[in-house]
Image (tube, rainbow, N blue to C red; front, side, top):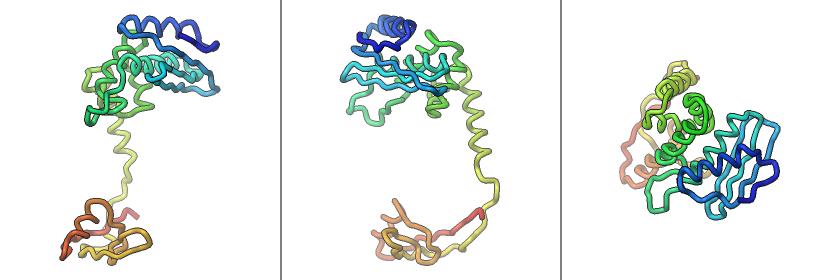
Length: 204
């Protein structure tokens, strides 16, 4: 493995240990860079055998970022034939959280760092039974509810039949001016006698 000069010895040892435990080959190239910021970032390219880390000032975050990329390395992305498979799916997080537990620190802290970048990690962590996942899920739900506007909706334009009109490149309802897009627009364009009705609501 070719490693860039700034790569710390602990990172080299961690790469070798994780790959040996997984029975995976070691990346051909490990690039390590430092930036004047708290958080780290990383990338893994299987085709070229490359793992790159841009490390911030938070040492635990840098370690977890390397473990995250190693999870990608030892659990290659799903092939194109797997419908619905994503870069950070349940399969990936099963590998990643196992690495965090074995080579990281507190599982709850690891989940918090992961969710700060990828909120969807919370749902996967709950399904995998990761410590602290239920609490993190409840906290996120509460935060999302608190962020919603508290003002009640009021009727701006009462219920009416949708009449299509053009406003530049958009289709709009001629009565209320609301844009008509997606499935609703397709239905109206197909219908000989449009019967769709809607109400225009506002929080203002």
